[in-house]
Each structure stands twice: as structure tokens, then as C-alpha cells.
Amino acid sequence: MNILKNELPKDKTPYVIENGEGDHYIWNKQVYTIIATNQSTGNLFEVITITGAMNESFPMHLHKNMYESLLVTEGVVDIQLEKDIITLTRGDYILIPPGIVHKYVMKAHRTKILSYVVNGSAVDIYKALGVPYNHSKHPSYIEETYSLNKQELEYNYDIEFTFNNISNEEITYWR
Image (cartoon, rainbow, N blue to C red):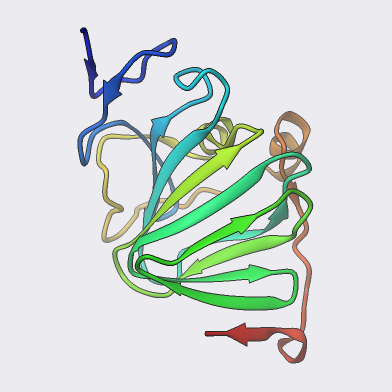
């Protein structure tokens, strides 16, 4: 049997992506590493790892069709769902169904999240959002920042940014 190593297949075939390998994209101080695509899984799911520094975040948004699940493999992450904030640590998992407004904030250095997506393409969103990067870990500093092209992303992908200004009194913390 021929097993691909450290490259994504174009069809359903066995493959291995070793730690630190894969296609990497960077946005601010977050690195998105693609380890499974719809193309490589027969349109069943996608898997991306997200690494970042403390206080790195992704803004409030929702998906109309996509199920997004997150597993914290290193560090601490605050997940905001609507008006609730849930603190997740290593080994904690959350499923976010379509239509739920959410965001995350990394609360520890060297945080790493495994994102598992069904019924959509987060890979395309991260590729459009970031730029190709040669490392699996986020840099300690960056020389330039990258901004969201909100209209382009919303037009082309299953993502809608809400940027709700929710007051601190309305936010509930869980843990």
C-alpha cells in the first residue's frame, strides 16, 4: 500500500502528516496548519490546527452551514458563544453548530487548538485570511499585521462577521 507522507492527497487515500508538517498559513500571530481537507476526505470533514500567542483571537462570527468543533491540545482558550464565555483547557472540547455567534481568545502562550469542521470549508477561509508560512509555530513577534477583508470573506465563504459590541455586564463566564 502506498501511503503519502507530509502531503495532502487529491483523493481519498491513506496519508500521514507528521507533527510540524503540513501547509501553514499565518494571520497576525496565529498559524493555521491544514492537516485534512474536504478533497482528502471525500467531502466529509476538514481538520486544521491553530497555534497562537496569548491574547490572539478570532472575531465574533457565525457560519450558516458549517459545524465547527474545537479541541484544546495545549494552553487555555476562552470561547464566547453569544453572550457566554467558556474557558477551555487542554483536553476540553466544544461543538459549535451553524448559526451560533462565536469567537475565541487564546489566554496562554503557545496555545494550540484542533479545529474539526463538517459541512463547510474552513480551509478556504484560512487560506484567504492568511498568507503562506514556512513554520508550524507562531512567531514571537511580527513585523506587519494582517487585517480581515470582511466583505470578500463573507461574499466567498460560509462566514458572517458580527462584531457585536456586547457590554461586559452581558457576558457570562463559565468554568
